[in-house]
Image 1 (cartoon, rainbow, N blue to C red):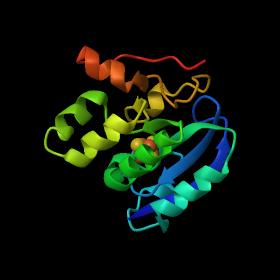
Image 2: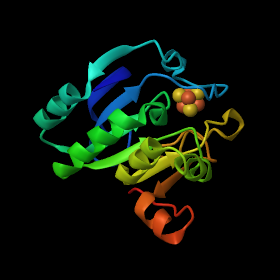
Image 3: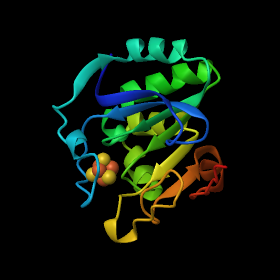
Length: 168
Ligand code: SF4
Protein backbone atom coordinates (compact mmCIF):
# COMPACT_ATOMS: atom_id res chain seq x y z
CA UNK A 1 0.00 0.00 0.00
CA UNK A 2 1.37 3.38 -1.01
CA UNK A 3 1.05 6.90 0.33
CA UNK A 4 2.05 10.18 -1.32
CA UNK A 5 4.07 12.35 1.00
CA UNK A 6 5.74 15.74 0.90
CA UNK A 7 8.31 14.59 3.45
CA UNK A 8 8.99 13.26 6.92
CA UNK A 9 10.80 14.34 10.08
CA UNK A 10 12.17 11.53 12.22
CA UNK A 11 12.36 13.33 15.56
CA UNK A 12 10.28 16.49 15.83
CA UNK A 13 9.49 18.27 19.11
CA UNK A 14 7.18 20.90 17.60
CA UNK A 15 4.38 18.71 16.21
CA UNK A 16 2.89 17.46 19.47
CA UNK A 17 4.24 16.36 22.86
CA UNK A 18 7.48 14.38 23.05
CA UNK A 19 9.62 13.19 20.19
CA UNK A 20 7.46 12.48 17.18
CA UNK A 21 7.86 10.98 13.73
CA UNK A 22 6.04 13.38 11.43
CA UNK A 23 4.51 12.46 8.08
CA UNK A 24 3.68 15.40 5.81
CA UNK A 25 1.08 13.99 3.46
CA UNK A 26 0.74 15.25 -0.10
CA UNK A 27 -2.49 16.76 -1.38
CA UNK A 28 -4.83 19.37 0.06
CA UNK A 29 -7.97 21.00 -1.32
CA UNK A 30 -8.55 23.51 1.46
CA UNK A 31 -6.37 26.27 -0.06
CA UNK A 32 -6.14 28.31 3.18
CA UNK A 33 -4.80 31.82 2.49
CA UNK A 34 -1.41 32.14 4.19
CA UNK A 35 -0.74 28.38 4.17
CA UNK A 36 2.95 27.68 4.76
CA UNK A 37 2.79 24.31 3.03
CA UNK A 38 1.47 25.16 -0.42
CA UNK A 39 3.90 22.68 -1.98
CA UNK A 40 1.71 19.97 -0.41
CA UNK A 41 -1.48 21.00 -2.23
CA UNK A 42 -0.97 19.11 -5.52
CA UNK A 43 -2.19 15.52 -4.96
CA UNK A 44 0.12 14.35 -7.76
CA UNK A 45 3.18 16.05 -6.24
CA UNK A 46 5.57 14.79 -3.62
CA UNK A 47 6.81 11.22 -3.54
CA UNK A 48 5.06 7.87 -3.37
CA UNK A 49 6.28 5.67 -0.50
CA UNK A 50 5.23 2.28 0.79
CA UNK A 51 3.63 2.53 4.23
CA UNK A 52 5.48 -0.61 5.32
CA UNK A 53 8.73 1.25 4.65
CA UNK A 54 7.57 4.19 6.74
CA UNK A 55 6.68 1.78 9.52
CA UNK A 56 10.16 0.27 9.44
CA UNK A 57 11.70 3.73 9.75
CA UNK A 58 9.44 4.48 12.73
CA UNK A 59 10.48 1.21 14.38
CA UNK A 60 14.15 2.20 14.25
CA UNK A 61 13.56 5.41 16.25
CA UNK A 62 13.87 4.60 19.97
CA UNK A 63 12.71 7.74 21.77
CA UNK A 64 9.40 8.38 20.03
CA UNK A 65 6.24 9.17 21.97
CA UNK A 66 4.19 8.98 18.82
CA UNK A 67 3.62 9.94 15.24
CA UNK A 68 2.02 13.05 13.79
CA UNK A 69 0.11 12.95 10.52
CA UNK A 70 -0.10 16.35 8.92
CA UNK A 71 0.00 17.86 5.49
CA UNK A 72 -1.45 18.53 3.22
CA UNK A 73 -4.73 16.96 4.24
CA UNK A 74 -4.23 13.52 5.82
CA UNK A 75 -7.88 12.52 5.37
CA UNK A 76 -7.39 12.48 1.58
CA UNK A 77 -5.30 9.34 2.12
CA UNK A 78 -7.16 7.87 5.03
CA UNK A 79 -6.77 4.18 4.17
CA UNK A 80 -2.94 3.91 4.23
CA UNK A 81 -2.71 6.31 7.18
CA UNK A 82 -5.24 4.33 9.20
CA UNK A 83 -3.15 1.21 8.54
CA UNK A 84 0.01 3.01 9.66
CA UNK A 85 -1.77 4.33 12.74
CA UNK A 86 -2.95 0.86 13.75
CA UNK A 87 0.55 -0.57 13.35
CA UNK A 88 2.31 2.14 15.36
CA UNK A 89 -0.20 1.79 18.18
CA UNK A 90 0.86 -1.86 18.47
CA UNK A 91 4.31 -0.41 19.25
CA UNK A 92 2.87 1.68 22.09
CA UNK A 93 3.00 4.97 20.18
CA UNK A 94 0.23 7.55 20.02
CA UNK A 95 -1.20 9.22 16.93
CA UNK A 96 -1.94 12.90 16.37
CA UNK A 97 -3.73 13.79 13.14
CA UNK A 98 -4.00 17.31 11.76
CA UNK A 99 -6.86 18.18 9.44
CA UNK A 100 -8.40 21.18 7.74
CA UNK A 101 -11.84 19.68 8.36
CA UNK A 102 -13.64 20.37 11.61
CA UNK A 103 -14.68 17.58 13.94
CA UNK A 104 -18.29 18.22 12.99
CA UNK A 105 -17.51 17.95 9.25
CA UNK A 106 -15.58 14.73 9.73
CA UNK A 107 -18.45 13.23 11.71
CA UNK A 108 -20.77 13.86 8.76
CA UNK A 109 -18.30 12.65 6.11
CA UNK A 110 -17.48 9.52 8.09
CA UNK A 111 -21.13 8.41 8.02
CA UNK A 112 -20.61 7.33 4.40
CA UNK A 113 -16.84 6.84 4.26
CA UNK A 114 -15.38 3.95 6.19
CA UNK A 115 -11.77 5.02 5.60
CA UNK A 116 -12.40 8.44 7.15
CA UNK A 117 -13.91 6.81 10.21
CA UNK A 118 -10.98 4.41 10.49
CA UNK A 119 -8.39 7.18 10.46
CA UNK A 120 -10.42 9.11 12.99
CA UNK A 121 -10.70 6.09 15.28
CA UNK A 122 -6.99 5.33 15.15
CA UNK A 123 -6.11 8.92 16.07
CA UNK A 124 -5.66 9.72 19.75
CA UNK A 125 -5.82 13.43 19.10
CA UNK A 126 -7.21 15.48 16.23
CA UNK A 127 -6.05 19.04 15.56
CA UNK A 128 -8.96 20.34 13.52
CA UNK A 129 -9.97 23.27 11.36
CA UNK A 130 -8.59 25.41 8.58
CA UNK A 131 -5.67 27.75 9.11
CA UNK A 132 -7.28 31.21 9.29
CA UNK A 133 -4.77 33.96 8.69
CA UNK A 134 -6.82 36.59 10.56
CA UNK A 135 -6.79 34.32 13.63
CA UNK A 136 -3.12 33.42 13.47
CA UNK A 137 -1.45 33.22 16.90
CA UNK A 138 2.26 32.58 16.93
CA UNK A 139 2.28 31.61 20.63
CA UNK A 140 -0.30 28.85 20.33
CA UNK A 141 1.34 25.48 20.95
CA UNK A 142 1.01 23.05 18.05
CA UNK A 143 -1.52 25.16 16.11
CA UNK A 144 -1.38 28.03 13.67
CA UNK A 145 -4.64 29.87 14.36
CA UNK A 146 -6.91 30.20 17.37
CA UNK A 147 -9.92 28.55 15.69
CA UNK A 148 -8.04 25.24 15.55
CA UNK A 149 -8.72 22.82 18.39
CA UNK A 150 -6.77 19.94 19.89
CA UNK A 151 -9.41 17.28 20.49
CA UNK A 152 -9.30 14.04 22.45
CA UNK A 153 -10.85 11.64 19.94
CA UNK A 154 -12.04 8.91 22.28
CA UNK A 155 -13.53 11.40 24.77
CA UNK A 156 -15.19 13.29 21.93
CA UNK A 157 -16.76 10.12 20.59
CA UNK A 158 -17.98 9.18 24.07
CA UNK A 159 -19.39 12.67 24.68
CA UNK A 160 -20.99 12.89 21.24
CA UNK A 161 -19.23 16.20 20.56
CA UNK A 162 -15.76 17.75 20.51
CA UNK A 163 -13.81 17.54 23.80
CA UNK A 164 -10.65 19.63 23.90
CA UNK A 165 -7.37 18.18 25.13
CA UNK A 166 -4.46 20.17 26.46
CA UNK A 167 -0.91 19.07 25.78
CA UNK A 168 1.70 20.09 28.34
S1 SF4 B 1 -5.35 22.61 5.54
FE1 SF4 B 1 -3.19 22.95 6.07
S2 SF4 B 1 -2.03 22.31 4.25
FE2 SF4 B 1 -4.16 22.56 3.63
S3 SF4 B 1 -4.26 24.66 2.83
FE3 SF4 B 1 -4.90 24.73 4.99
S4 SF4 B 1 -3.01 25.20 6.13
FE4 SF4 B 1 -2.40 24.50 4.06
